[in-house]
Every structure is written in structure tokens, then in C-alpha cells.
Length: 320
Figure (cartoon, rainbow, N blue to C red):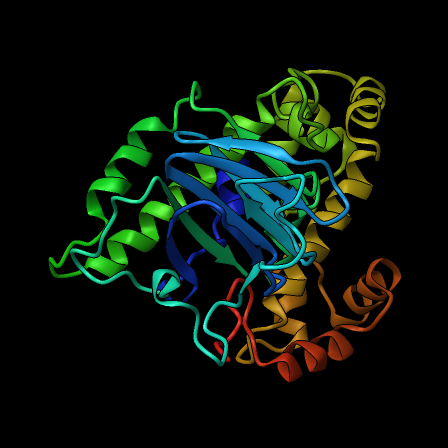
């Protein structure tokens, strides 16, 4: 199993949180919705991405940017003066509706001949599993166009304004693929600071143990059994794993199980006991104790809060 794929499986874009802006200078768009992630793609021209409280980042055509919320950010042609008066606020799906050039779903054949064309997609990531990776992102990042996402971006541009059946589904999936591609390229860059376990996946000692726990988290793994997977002694595995990941194998497994359990608890058809069994606990009592120790609340309390929010893991925030 590819751990990167597994962590991002619940990240999905929706048509209601996609927009296109055709811009003429001077312009400043301030994104206010507080989405967990926003993907920004200048298809033509260039601008500056200004995260709240951060330094401006140059965003040229062909590059891709990801902004981690909930703080607002601005896309502007003038980073020195483009964040004050005259800024247009963008609130996806809010009332009043966005300006026509920020319509959630672009009209087929709409004008794209402005000097700057920005595509953006917002993601409200509620699931705990992908957040284990996404929490390692800086407030804003830019991946330049020399990376390998170019073909996806070109194909996306060709689809904009299409009227073929399934247009919106194709658009959503292309944005999802481009988001994952951008994240993968970012974590491969020298300036990135991925979590310890991400780098440990490639390690010949820690990697096999990590992959085993992700492939079958319900298995009653012991340090000895995980060490056998790596072909080393228990002492060697424990030392190397802790050096790279920051926790020992057993502690990491418990944390991983609780992340999985948090997402399973949002499914009303599963009892707490059923969730416990799915993540390797024989009884609900032991599972509840471990969950409360790591999460600070009982599984039942977590479920009540998730139900009250009205959203499933990874579901986009409702419009309005």
C-alpha cells in the first residue's frame, strides 16, 4: 500500500468550491472562507500570494500554490499596496454571490483572454488521516513549473469551459490529482519539512515496519514482529524508528490507530465496539481508554461533536 495515497484518499474537491478569475490590473482578491486548503493555479499571467502575516510569494503561470487555512490570504498584482482599500473579498458560495468572474462553475465558453487568469479550488478537510500529512505544510507554498505536474495542468486548462457530459466530475478529479501532484512535488523539495515518518518510509529499517502497520493496523503488532519484517533486531528497529519518526513503533501504531478510529467514529452505522475491532482492540473499554488518553475525550464525545458539525470526514463545507 502506498502510504501517501492512503493519507490523501479522503481529500476531494467539489464543484461548489471551484472558481476562475479573469483579472486586469490593478486587482486584489482576498480569500475569506477559511478553507483547510486552497489550491491556486495561475493559467495565464502572474501575481503575488500574500498569506496573512506572511511574506509575499511570487506565483507565475505554470506554478501551483497551496495555502493552508483557516487564515485569509490575498492574490494581488501589487504586494506592497494590494492588501488595503479596494480589495475584493472572495467567499465561495456565500450570500451575496461572488462577482461573475468568480462564479463557482465557469460558464462554457466564458472569456479567458484577460492578462491574468487564476483557477482556485478550496478543500475543507475534516478527516483525521490526511491531516497527519497536511499539518506539516507551511502556511503557504509554491511549487514552480519545472516540476512534473505540468501535463495535468495543461489538460485541466483544456477542459475549462467544456460542455461534454460529466464535465464537473472530470474537473473535480483533475483538481484532486493536481493537488496530490503538487503536494508530492513539494515534499520532495529541499525546503520542505515533512513529518519524520514521511522520510522514514524510504528507510530500509523503519520503512518496512511503517508500511506493515499501515497495511494492517488491526494486527496485534509487536516490536519483535515488526523487526522481523525489517530483518533486524528489536533493539535496532526501536532505535532507528525512534530516531526517524520521533516515537517508538508501538506508540506510532497507537497514534495511527486513533487517527483511523476518529474517522470511523463519524460513521453512524458503526458502534464504538465495531470501531474498536477495526483498529485492533478486542474490547471497547481498552479502545476508549486509549482514545481518551491520546485525544483528550471519549469516543462517544468525539462522535457527538462530529455529528453536531453535520459533516463527514473530507466533506466540503456547505455553501452559504
